Length: 237
Image 1 (cartoon, rainbow, N blue to C red):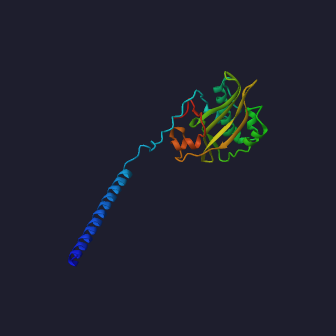
Image 2 (spheres, rainbow, N blue to C red; image 1 turned 60 degrees about the horizontal axis):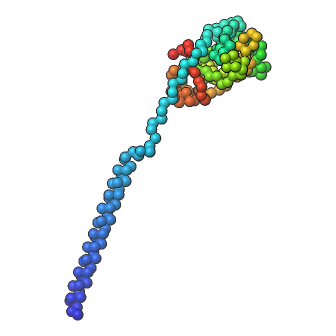
């Protein structure tokens, strides 16, 4: 066979291979560009599985309990008057707590103040209240906060005892913190009397709010731990 013919055949085969390689490389590059574009588009498009924005908490309902805040101003033993009902038990507990924490009488004689509102209060609870720091004056504002009933004993229509919590701002010597005061109030021959009471710490509102109506959702979750909280019927708004 003619050598020149073989040479031409080899040249043409080489050219064909080069063209094929170029075409394949061009096709691969085009597919890569399409994939990148598809991925970018998918990244920019929100998926249907994204969660919706968090819903706001439901508003705190207003209960039927109304208390007399002027009890905190009494320099003498208060006359706590409340019906033998769940709401009456709450009213009696909160008013008794208000007087024993923040009244001038309690500040003047803290160790004997608990016995002034109850003949059945436990000695440990009475001592805790007696040693409660009132230096610089105390201001407790239940109407700015909320209450809840945790339980009761006896018939619901005529309970023997009611377990109550009230969350409210307490100011001592111009320093204000939210506090939960909880305990049990019992029905006696002399009406409602506290049988146990304990002030306890709770979370503080990050907004610095001193009123329930000013709470953000975050404040409420921090301060009012748990369920069942209710605003006072005559709460300050």
